Image 1 (cartoon, rainbow, N blue to C red):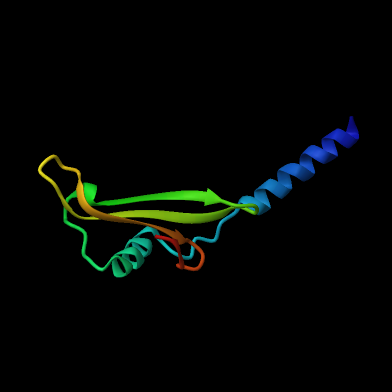
Image 2: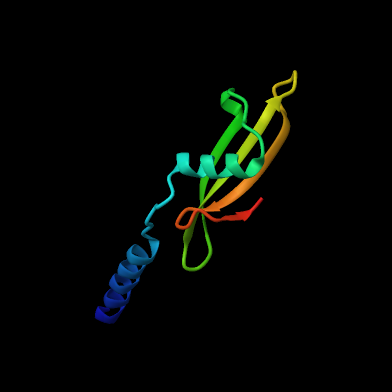
Length: 96
């Protein structure tokens, strides 16, 4: 029983230390990086810029997924858009 408790405490401590993130790139900085790479400025509508934070890999690493739309069609759907996956620690675009 004591051994099981020690293993659980060690697992909890490891999960806390591995799960911590040093968010060097903010959400706004990720949008700026994606906008520079997109080659266009997204429209001013709220649905033209979508941002989500995701965790990937082992050990876990934070990434920003940024979707930008240059304009919306008459139905409110993006007419021209690009998506980017940006490493939150380095600011490097890993997928576009």
